[in-house]
Image (cartoon, rainbow, N blue to C red; front, side, top):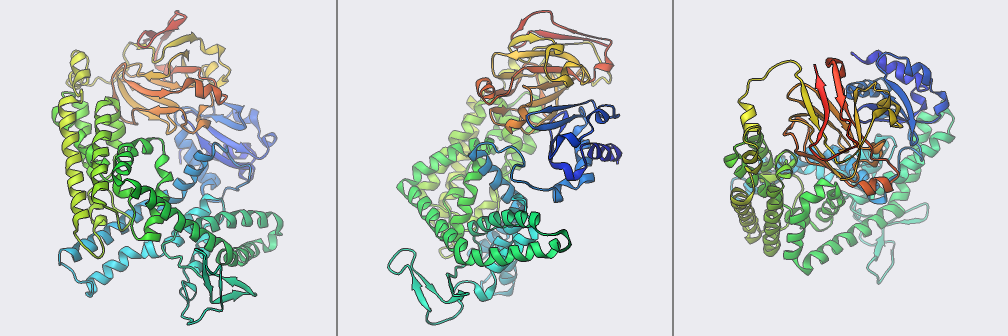
Length: 640
């Protein structure tokens, strides 16, 4: 409620919500993509309380807010209804590379259902486990109820994907759901009981298909779409395009029912006749190709996927493999991909356990306990970004241990037989539906055990756990943790987080930084793609794209470091973050790495402002007079 009026005023003066294609935010500003920037009242916005300034850059209309931009963004989204009702246009948003667009699409479709998917998979897995150990009978009512509870999502998976995919593609989600409902409609699923087909299409080929019904004389090839993935995604893609086109052509007085009616009348038959069969054949081909590659050498496949899975996760590339795994389970009843990467969370957990036991750094010890527990349950981000990556060696050891575990799983030929469940909850997914606790399942236990032992031993003895603490015994986290916390601001010297040429803020093209309205400071033109912490303190903010970070120092300074100008548009490409929000960091600790040449090649400057956002708390902020600075050189002197 604090920013409700400000949000309404901003929306009004960017031309109203009907003038907004999209709105996102970075670490200091709202970034609108407007239909017509001439409709925006720029001068009015600049004079508003709560708005620092307004800028136009790279096709975006940027309203600079400051540190509290996340709260203002939430208020703007709520006031404008942009999350659920913003218009979508063919030119909406940055296109990006084909790979980035594909990964963004897949993550947008599957992320909303991952929680309930994991829950359903766990129920199915435990139900299978209870049968395997003789606690339940498949004929019993308890098993049947639990099976229905766990199996419902997977049977009707196209309906959930119809909602999330249609929403991702910019259509009405409920239309996507109805399309999916038609695909799994019982009377039309599979072959509806006819003894003899009317005729057969593609006879003598791998696509041979009996035809039992026709649609206005056009043959309909009936498939089984329950548990399928690709057909509904393709169908909703075309449905969203058609719906938006019809919405532009249909008079408003009949738009509410004409648009969904004609979308369904066109897309549902088209899906049954063309999209569904082609997508199903493609699904089957994809599944067979995956299994063929796996069969070439399960051990090598396991070592590769197991060893690089966490790297894939860091760059978001794992989303390219998730739908293949889903498809494999739907088409073949099992999947090797999610089995081969199974050990990574256990290896990482064991590495963190070794750090927890051995570290002398009190902050690291405190973070290690919950990170270990979450990794055992398959949630690896706290351990990965908060502990393993900053220490480097434990991360590498985890990759090696996971690779060996993956190779063992490949050797035993283990596959998952149902989706859902992470970490220890994924064990039931390895139980064969007919053979029960077979050799392949035993191989899973061996692989997890070997991966954990290797990761623990190697990390404990060779992980370099206490190198930083030993080298900085007088100022390391362990000694600082024993000091009393003193409220208020202290005098402080800030070191240079970058190596490069020093530039005064007034010379920057970005007026929000150049004017000093965001705070006093200095800028550096980096010569090396490494950003270190300018002081010891806490990561108060880090943007998901890793292009900007905020540090609150132990002495009370609030430091904002923004790598480059408008680099948020790279969507994290060429940036690698090594810390997460809330992490305690040491002066000189590596925070972010970035590819200078790639960023410049993409058309963005890398000039980096280092701003004291609470400048009003100081009587004097003195930048260095040196023209160049190296990592760790004095940069700013702060006097209270």
